[in-house]
Amino acid sequence: MNAPCLVFVTGGVMSGLGKGITTSSIARLLACKGFEVSAMKIDPYINVDAGTMRPTEHGEVFVTADGGEIDQDLGNYERFLHKTLSKDHNLTTGKVYKKVIEKERKGDYLGKTVQIIPHLTDEIKKAIMKNAEGNDILLVEIGGTVGDYENVPFLEAARQLKLELGQRVVFVHVSFVPVPGFLGEPKTKPTQHSVKFLQQMGIQPDFLVCRSVREVDSVRRQKLALFCNVKPECVINNPDVENIYELPLVFESQGFGDAILDKLGLKPRGNQLYLWQRIVDEFRNASKEIVVGIVGKYVATGEFELKDSYISVNEAVKHACAKLGAKPVIKWINSLSENITKDLEEVDCVIVPGGFGSSGVKGKLEAIKYCRENKKPFLGLCFGMQLAVVEFARNVCGLDADSSEINPHAEHKVVDILPEQRGINEKGGTMRLGEFPAVLVKGSLVWKLYEEAGRIADGVVFERHRHRYEVNPEYHDLLESKGMLVSGKSPDGRLAEFIEVKGHPFFVATQAHPEFTSWPGKPNPLFFGLVKAGLEKENSELNDAYR
Ligand code: GLN
Image (cartoon, rainbow, N blue to C red):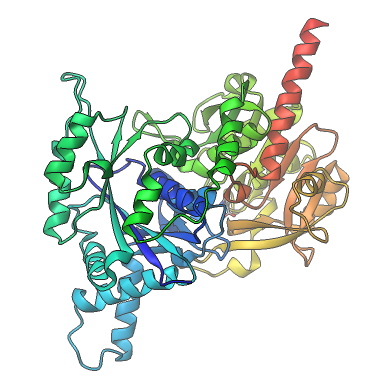
């Protein structure tokens, strides 16, 4: 294998342009050309990781198999690359400073003045090159927007790497080309300014990727090329697409993959994009509508809906639907609203995703009860499973039950703090995090779903976790005696990892976050099962109506 190459992806004009999707799509495209490709994200914030951030602040906290609490973009990389990435694929200002300060305290710098250049930039370069090891190409997405104070050291490290590695480094700048309604024409000036800033930092982008509502015409592309010092054929269109997984194909149609390889001095080693095309076709051909209700509290900020808080859940639903030829209509149900039953009546199946704290619990419990009693397909994720147990304990077992996270004085703490979590005060990185095995009960619904997907070996499945509480093992027997099945447990038999309700068409919940292991073309079995049950329920209701 040759020395690895680097493709830096920077962003201009504003955040939220879909730089992560662009990075992921380039990665997928290059992987389809026969290269070993990986991707990493640099987040210029001071938090050591995303674990302590509220989802409405920063979007979802993605969990890696090795227990990293990471920016949501890593989820996109895994989904597009069909690859599991380690937590080292996320670098933050907090992480780099922490490392440098620890070294300084140990005296590793031998009396030197420790500075941003070269000490911090050296640490950044080292982390990048470590991730590049064993790959042909590493995509490095630099978060934030050029011009921010925070990402300057990272851009400086990238500049140095270009100087050191020459042709093995390429820069892609993703920028916004607005088409203001009052003008009706695409404007290039904001992009020109953001490129100027990069150039001041000593970085000349090789490619401009123009995010816009529609394709930017050749007149504007020529202009951008001239003012930004790139070749016209290196100005790439990135218009809004209905389905994000189409983007690698949009790039391929503009020769973007081959052009990057050419700059890196590489030749394509084949083209397997037809395999990706097949996956995209499944999304394109899906037609049967299914309404999926997601009941959460992180769905709004001010007057706007915030879908990013549950992005992996959202994507997992899409993957499952595409496989089943269905087109999802996702209905966000705010658990903080009063009386959500009417919303629930309008959906074909329901997801109660993860969460923390007592606000919104009332609405979630109401949703769970409704699904259990009305045989509406239901999938509970993490907190969603804990609340399914609370609901069952209260309304089926007749206990005055709660989770001690919500009411520490409850008579029956059917969900309680994990013993190893007692006494932990520090919040960052201290939950039960990452991938853990679970032993499934043979013949259970969950077992069948994982078996069908080929994701079970010797009765064991793996999913990722992020929680401090567990279903209290003292109540397993009682719950089971009343019709709940603990269908998956940790290998020591203590932790309930999966539950289902007997006699219900699909009432399944897990302590894990199966949304993190769902890929386009390879949906997670639980989401697949939920959507399938939702479609079946809809069919049987239609039949009833005709009868
Ligand atoms: N708050 C719950 C716990 O910590 C559930 C966490 C989650 O849903 N990720 O156990």
